[in-house]
Image (cartoon, rainbow over all chains, first blue to last red; front, side, top):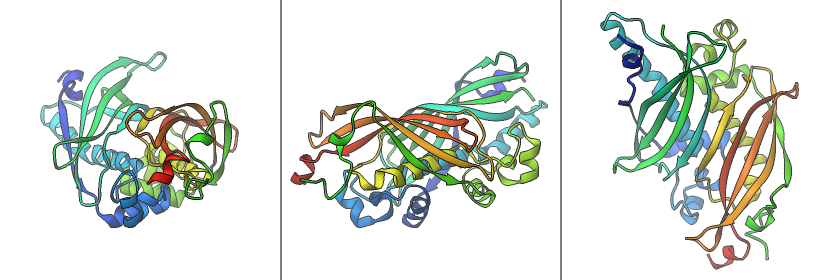
Length: 156
Length: 157
């Protein structure tokens, strides 16, 4: 199995879905982003956002959860083909992150990842920097968040 | 007139302005709690696995670092502002691990500002954030844009 196939380059992978509850939105926000529209239904209604919604960082963190939890199935698919799964190293960063719409309480958000390209890392043989497009879509099919992520990978 | 009694409205941000947004300690317990919920990988869940990884210790998840920067922004100025949320980030770089026991500090520079074309009561401010550890090493930096109500615009709502 070629490295490109293991990375599923160009293919959008469904990482799963999550329904955001008002309780968890407020619990995350009280810890990390206690702006009024993330901790109070009433304040949220008065804001530009129009209703209680998850912190953008909460939505991004939930993308990461689904990315990590989806890995075993991907690894299993590669092993089933008789190959060694890719190894993930640290992420170097994200860019062009857009919070296009809020994730409102009660919304069911689906997370996806599309591996776009990879390149060698100078001075780090066997390691590549993989760039992926990461997205979150609500139950109406509207993209609510997207960003590009760069993470180190190795061909097992 | 003030903007609903808030210290920071769109008009108060001046490009080139630098603000010290304070610091916070990062505990192993907090790192593990966040990782269990959002990034359950061994190097964020277990001291031993973290020590054995390239990160060199129990390290905070990347999105945990982002979340803690968000909290420092909130406590440093955002909660006392007319913020209406952020449309996005231009970039975020994780430059060094944030390890259990570290104390992180955030410095913010106002990069640019512009009025909203579609909403006359709003303006957008581009902010550069630099997060450092107790050794003075930069661990993360990012640039984001935040929407703020104007002082005058806020009266019409």
